Amino acid sequence: MQRELSEDIVRQIHGRLSPERASTLARRQTSSPDAYDLYLRGLNFERQRTPPTTRRAVEYYEKATALDPGYSLAWAALAGTLTGSALNSDVDPGTVRDRAREAARRAIETGPDTAEAHRVMAMGQWYFEWDRWPEAEAGYRRALSIDPRSATTHLMLGHLLSQMGRHPEARQATLRARELEPLNPLVFALSSQVAFQGRDYTEAMRFAERAIALDGEFWIGYVMRGQALEQLGRNDAAIEALTMAERFSGQNSKPMSLRAYILARTGRANQAETMLDALDTASRDRYVPPYAMALISLGLGRRDRALDWLERALDVRDVHLIYLPVDPKWDALRSDPRFGSLLERCGWAGTGVAPG
Image (tube, rainbow, N blue to C red):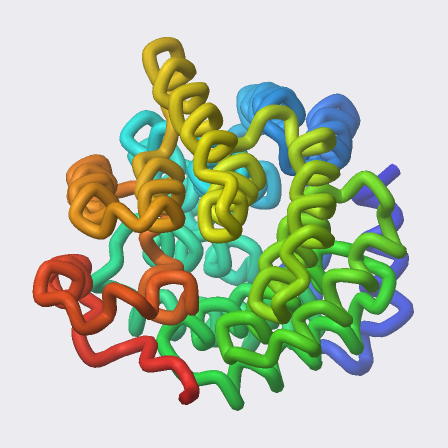
């Protein structure tokens, strides 16, 4: 059915497409109805971005590629979900990096003219290969040359540009993403992150609230709201937003560590210590990003301890380090030689300078 639909579309618009582009459109989907069904089920779980739903998405994508090894979109979705799991599902990057890279390679091999394949290859370079950020940018732009109407690609390019300190370009990219998908909560949540990294906290707050309005259980929207509120001096409201994020995140360390950071900075060190101990205990049974421990230590005023945790994060290639070049929470350490050395070893020396 999907193949017949694609062929009908191609016939209707054939006069406006080159033969090569028409062929690409026709082969985007699989000829296996079962593989297509598995792919759609994977998409449904992937969009929730919690540890349990991410695991389900990976399972469905793996089954889809097993049924049809030539299914480029399923390979791309698998690569993107594995890569993203290191950031949104507290997965040890060492356990998914090679699998994600291989899935991205298979996506390009089976669909060299598929925008999604180039996008996930760029995503892996951004998250895992920090000295290859210029190549990641080129990969996103290659994906946009194939599909200029992909809101996801505009959004991810904007996020990368923001972390490289290119904030005006980043804002333009996320604006285009919002124009293309005005009802997608992730588009607004990551637009909030880009605004936050550009130090426009009022705008970050506005986008976060839009994300929550679109999906009242979207935990990333609450995290974005919490970090914007903290910078605006509304600490109690920030803690409330992060409590909501924890409720919906499937035990992700991000909202918990950020809430503990704010508690520590507002004189509630005992509560922050309890949360730090809880994460430390949890780390004996599962991977907890060292970045989370570093952030709480920073909130408690333990600069050296925070830097020790960041060193451990570098050792395991914790993907949360990609926020260091621009996140204002780390401004207190920017003059510290150890922090500068860390950025240099990550490959970010001279990049990501935030607006004053």
